[in-house]
Image (tube, rainbow over all chains, first blue to last red; front, side, top):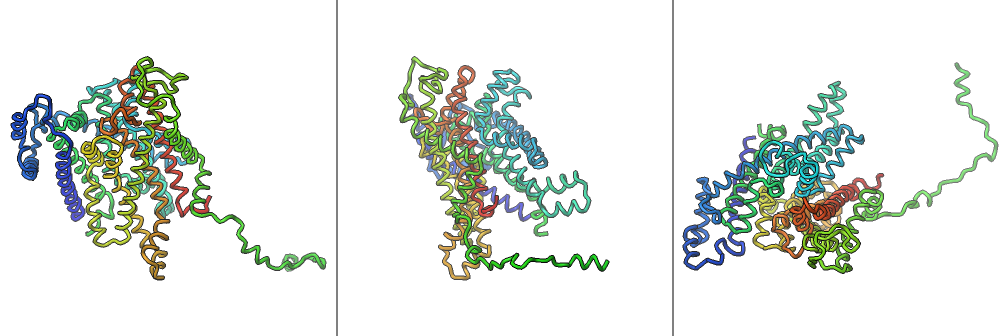
Length: 306
Length: 317
């Protein structure tokens, strides 16, 4: 177990390092630069470049950047005057993570419930309903889902606020829009996995031992069937959290998405770099936690090497 | 007691000539009664039997044909602005209405479909080829090559896809080919991982061992034994990857990085429709309908193909 965790941590650190390097290179490869404009004279440009350190050799810039990163300093934004990247992230990330977590909690819990019910009542009406929801969920892109929810529940029927993010009732539509795809995926996966577990010999053994039905479902079927779902949680967290970008723009939520897209379009080097590294690092961390969690619940990994 | 036993074994009277010895019909026993189906014929037969999958296949084909021909045969151009007919609803002259600049939505939907579907199919196909090559080589030959490539894949897999796609798009600029490239840069990894796993499993199976024992070359083993066993999975995976690519295109176009106007795609149409949702909902609903039905059909087709192309299910009903 210790060796397993150590290996995952090493891969994650390496991944983060590769990410920083690749993003640093890609940002400099973008066509154009942050300072072009009508009133730009060569003198001002030279001053600006000196101020942000862009006149130094690329390798030196890179080393300085990594050094600053290690101290947790993402640098100054080039477009938002007098704002540090840390400052922008600190003000916008809480909205994104709040929305993302709500969507994840909703989609994973409901997805598991749907998947389990669907498998338990295979071929019945309930199963059919769950399958239809799952297929719809994987066929509707989240921004369309968001717009549709907004149109019907917000504008037409007036059940929920149309936009912004000021209280619990504001969070419901965006969370559903963001989580629907994941919900569908989790429920499909859980259903398939449950149906496979049900045919296994250890279920037969448990039944012939006279173990109660409830106990078999909880202790033997769900416990085993949930493993494949846990393996996809890493990518699922990543998709959901990056999906917040679009949902934020539809529901006018002041999260990271708006800043990210703007910084990319305006070639704000330090902001693109900082946000990508922060976001990427966060997702890599999420992946690492999922991997370790997987090790903890899978006895084949937990007990290996003991 | 004795008597009943005797009656049970009593042989009934048979009149002479009541039975005739016909001998064995040797030819009839060996005759092939059903036509011999190849793998693909069998798969095609099973897809046709699966009504949902077959309907999906027809729908996708219909959309593809419309995407090719509808813009050619329409009297409107996809970028023709008409200030007299802005944001109109469905009518005889504009079948799906017009957008806020008076452009005909029927033409725009199919022009956009052309872009979205080509991006979807092209990137999925290239991903499958590249992924299968890398995964197949690593899985089959193993050793150092495999160890190195797998470490690289481990690291790449950890980097969030979307972030890399966004950055590559920014570097390459908007356009169909940049999109395809951006989708390939991250897309092949998934295919490579699963193909490697499958090849690794197949390599250890007895029929491969037998072929090796008989001195069959690696090339023939790969072509004759490995590929037929994984081609179904690869095709299924490819079908599922198309809606993903279309989805990504729509997402990137939505945040302004995918396709640049006046060129249009389904993502662009949806992006243009969202701000007008309150006043002219049809401008979002129309492209949304085509995006969703395409994704739905491709997902269902993928499900059907998974069963139809599984060699283990051949001959079963």
